Image (cartoon, rainbow, N blue to C red; front, side, top):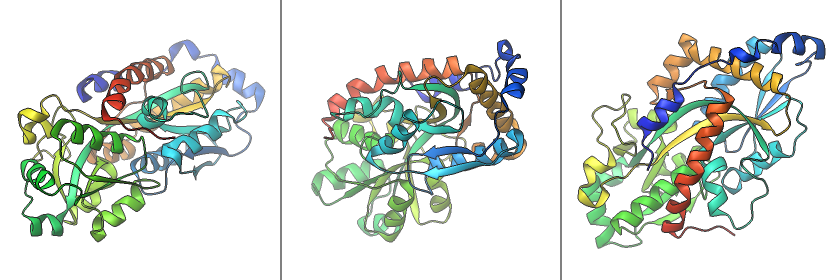
Length: 336
């Protein structure tokens, strides 16, 4: 399985396309952009996809001279929002904040896909790679004497079906991280898919949900507030944002050897979008991510900033499609 370190090597690639230096004159002639740009987020507000999208949208608004408006279109594990962009006019006015779910997992999870994750999109740039974090409701964990991953596994095995596992939707990386955990440990949890991380986290804090393998940035606030307890991160290495929290492999012992399930987020346009527009957005994304405010914000939440080229992002999508196919099959997860 590709580790977060491997993703990081792709993430930290070249930031701009020197070969597209001609793009600005062409765009000046075409008048793009002459109106607001719609950035579709295929999940509910409050999750990591939404957090990253809004951070980038603010900077793109400044550099492009037109408002970049975030539009949350949640549902079907991100498929609804992604399909909107896949079928949008390829004119640079509709873009997607895609994820490992929408572009690497869903293809193998859903019986019928409304779009092709490769053929229907023009990759623009990877925004960031993000580890997931296994969190439990802090108050309930204390009551059940669950202090670490081994305690959690022991309780789940002794009480099958009594623990509720929240996710941001069927087929998301959050869901699949939990399925991988269940497959490797034999610990049974009842899965409850939500329309995004935001509402799932609300129920985690309220105590109606017990465990979640959430993206680190969206869970960080509740971890710091003491509402959620971080048992482990799902990456191959510890996160600089939570240096005292072990990896799932470190905390779980031999049965979780090799466990790794990280997420990534990137911008895509409809297939057929003019290359000069793709290049312009990529260049501005790379600049935005390099600004001190955005860079520090992403790093503080455990994300690894990127801004790589369309070609590098396309290569990552291809590799991730191959990686997640056997994981989905082994989990037995399927959505009609």
